Image (tube, rainbow, N blue to C red; front, side, top):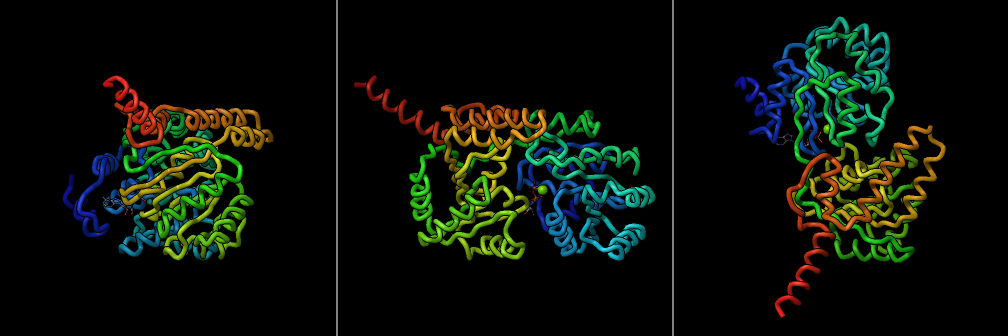
Length: 413
Ligand code: ADP
Ligand code: MG
């Protein structure tokens, strides 16, 4: 690899070395090849396009679904001294004109664009004339209805890129790895021939456990659990805003330092609760799935699912927020089949094909929760990965071991 690129890694981003596949991915993009990156959350996907962007002539377009994430990344890049901007609905006309002037001047290395802004005709016309180095599509699973976060605008990206420049290299990145989603993305972006870089999804430091959910008992169990982990950071996921409020209140009444988080809270309350959690003013955040995307708190010690998630995909993402620092993380789910039935009922107003998809995803979730085989093996298999042997670090492996040890005793007697 070009020394200048390695220098950039160190001098601009402050990293001494690449992680996992990063170097090969960066090299591939620098060669101008279409690239498909599948890496778990927290593995370092951003660098895969940020480093080539600063090392190449022209401006890289980064398509990203969340305005908050976009702003975070641009702020961070600016703090590294990199000229980066975003185009989205939060900008005034004057502001977006200023951004466009920077891009035209050739100074901007990365331009983050929301899919809604990308599809606007005036922006397409503008980007057509600009000197674009490549296009990165972050959170590419938003393209697929099989992903956990489908965005219809993402489906239009391919035709827009074709208009901006039909030879533009494309890099798609996602942490969502089911073979179904992967196929969908590649087909939709017409990049079946792209070079694929897929890392393992095995999070060896996470302990997976499922316990039966029993009315009232479970709440007591959770309180006991949190008290036994006093001062540690944890997330409790619930399905509804109402449940979030109820559990957060219950925890507070029981002397636990907890705060709620869901999309129905006032903006400033939501931001405050999130910041309090990040700054350790609050130990436990009780949240809907609105919480977590792009949040990088390394020392979350447990993630509890009070309600069963809608898919294994979502479950993996949510549990993945535990143990980012590589230290212990406990993923504890409370499960009863009635919750699956309840979720199925919510789906009944959806269009037929969406309803069918949602049902399949739910049944896979139920199968996981009810399974007695190694949880990690099950989970990784779902992502198309084969774990050579049982993990020995989940509730089912622990149970098997206990039974096995018991039998062994009988044999020797
Ligand atoms: P992803 O998008 O895959 O979830 P991010 O790109 O947000 O992950 O990166 C996660 C964390 O890893 C960030 O804090 C980032 O600074 C860090 N990181 C990325 N690459 C490296 C590297 N080569 N060395 C050390 N830290 C890295
Ligand atoms: Mg990312």
